[in-house]
Amino acid sequence: MSVTWHEIGDEEADLRLDRWLRRRFPGLTQGRIEKLCRTGQIRLDGQRVTAGTRLAPGQRLRLPPLGEAPSPPPRPADPHAARLFQRLVLYEDDALIVIDKPPGLPTQGGPGLGRHLDALIAGLGVEDAVRPRLVHRLDQETSGLLVLGRGPRAAAFLARAFRERAVEKTYWAVVMGRPSQAEGVIDAPLLLAHGPRGARARLAPDPDAPGAARALTRFTVRDAAARRAAWLELTPLTGRTHQLRLHCAALGTPILGEAKYADPPARLSGFSERLHLHARALRLPHPAGGTLFLEAALPPHMAESFAALGFSAPPPRPPQRETRR
Image (tube, rainbow, N blue to C red; front, side, top):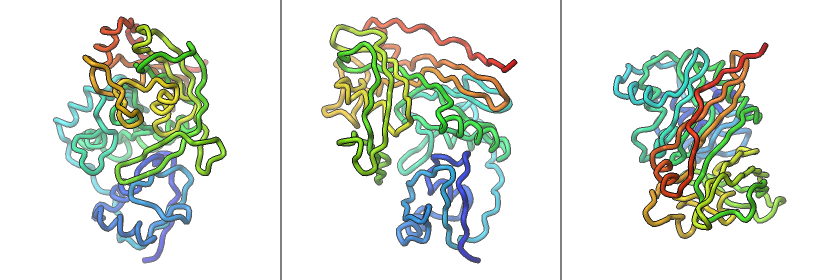
């Protein structure tokens, strides 16, 4: 056997390299994957990688001989996992599933993680052709709308829509303090680094700094409790890692519950220490044509904080599918 090359497709976007490898080579151990990366035998677009590197469409992956990679049969259905997954489903049809992800549930597995969305999907026991596939991600502590494509074709369509900014995303956040402006656009470039504990972003010192990526977020103050806290509606105009969390901190109003990008952690006495960031609404093109609009209710910890602060959130509207005429 010889070296092989694989071009990353849309449906593989944002997968960790180690997870991509284990899906195709079930016998590969994590230790061997890390050694192959460390010794440069696995390369992405000619560059060395780590096991945690996330893949992007169009990249070319160089693989050394790894043995045969038969398509494994689906795991036997796990009724408990299937029930847990079904409780999260907000909308589904022949092309996609939209879930309302609770805070604290990781989308993908990793070291030290027990229950995660990938494991719940595996528990459905369905064939690869119709297996739900994640097409974008939410942070572990962020709640709200998360889209999965049914099978490779729908997943590729949806992943492309997210990547090309054809999806309108609206987030709600409770922040410490109150921005000086009622609305505006945050234009602050970010730098991203991958480490053993996952991705960590930071504000770039200037737009021309090496590796800096432009990041834009539109914000509107929906309500405020004096200068104590505010309810922000956030629309990311770019899709950088941890963009909303860093941009709120850059305003001087970190998200309530923020510990990673706030020093000291953003906490209020008597309020939940969970991150108060919620993917509230999505408007996205549907693989079968037309547009789908969805909203998700606040998670319990945010609903309690809204009530305590006197914020009145409208209930979510039912899912709406608009077809082209």
